[in-house]
Image 1 (cartoon, rainbow, N blue to C red):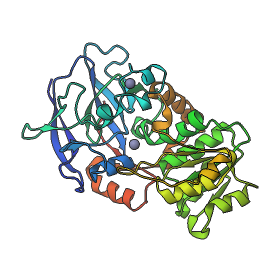
Image 2: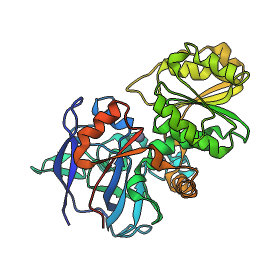
Image 3: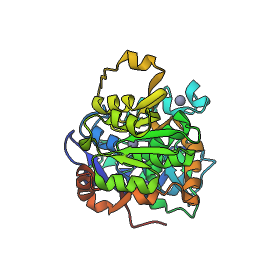
Image 4: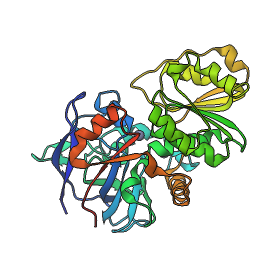
Length: 372
Ligand SMILES: [Zn+2]
Ligand SMILES: [Zn+2]
């Protein structure tokens, strides 16, 4: 069955997405159609819309979608019509890294998530005139009321979580929480600093508390975000504006530096501050994605003191394993996703974008009325 949907289409780098009717094709055997209940706006969507990720145009972005399966291809075995799902990034599920539970480093990560088409090169969307539109962005292109995904990146949600708020688990929240719980793995009693209190940084703060860190320092220029971080588990917060040498201030606060740092900004300045906040040994994970190359100068002498700088994509997590873990933590009240979210009706996409750009929403989620 050919279906029509409303989608936000980017036709030119640097231009805001415009809402347009689009058409979905006949499903392939391994595909599903998901009616989106809510989709988060992630910075990677904005970086791509600005031309910072080589995704072909015209394209439908959006990669933090969650909703209800309304159609399933004949080869789909784990999901059925009526199931609620959160969509994660796509991965081949077959290469060496996928086979050992590390699909964020899938050999086919770039073509599957940024390629704009199915693995066989066809596009899943057409515009109102019947011309092809690029989709499959992170296996979903979920700035749309209906999307084509596959079992590879759709994870079943229990009925008692609000599906319209679950989408950000699939990227931003998985990224921050996974960096802490899967990569840094702090022992109870450790200290950890988080630089940049957006959704990724807030997820890292919540994860640090879950891991039993007793000192959690949150750094952000925005007072409202620092307040929120304190309610989520930060034991100290700092504004970089008040402290020209943030690394030194954290070393003073913690009696010699933190065991771990999560850097969720991606700028050279902040990466250097995060490294200088570490004790020895200590590890800094950098997560912020910037357009193109992003060279950083580090002091080798500082690293020789037993310090590590690592980079992490998507929390180095397998969504099929990690997202159910995060959902359980959410249900238990220790990972309160809803505290980060401000919702906007999908028709008010412009307003949501403006709020994200102005820093007025930690995580903006676009919602759709119709759900079956
Ligand atoms: Zn793979
Ligand atoms: Zn993202």
